[in-house]
Length: 259
View (cartoon, rainbow, N blue to C red):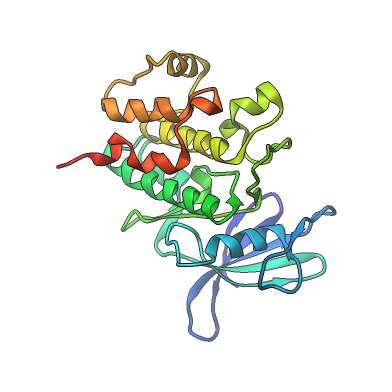
């Protein structure tokens, strides 16, 4: 295995090459926590560690280029190993965004955000709640700007009922969890997408005054198009019932820009 690509709460990711054909891959080695959650996936006789199972589900069916592909895995007594596709050249979106001085023009942001939204939508359609969509969990090909969603380690199976335990990144946490101690998968995903878009085009996280103005429907940011501001306002409503539906995001006027 080659150099380390990243390190997280439970594991490390390394560069690798597949022996049979020399394909460049990423190898994630994750240690198992004591309360390791396993899930049954149709077609697999033994239960799989949650993260592997979620990626198997997210990859099931026609390939979704916006979701990282799981090529192989091994389940060992105290750890599990995943072999993942490794786009090249690429960096995580946080590093890409930082290289652009923490702000992207709307055309670039639109291209990145559309792909991220597609990844989130397809995860939910396939029964997967990623739960940690953020700049650091998106890989971007620096030549083509193609984006891939990675790291399902905070995820869970998508359920109709609410979740009472938050797992993910505090800056992207939906407000209903703080208010009621419960949140639902799809509206929480929409909220995290809203935070991500806000970061891309505003260069900062939304602050309390932004959120108040969004709820009052008067928020805007100098230099942004009216359509972009409208989309941000519909993504970041405090009430999950007032937020735009995940499946309707890509139909928004902001994506209908003509040259």
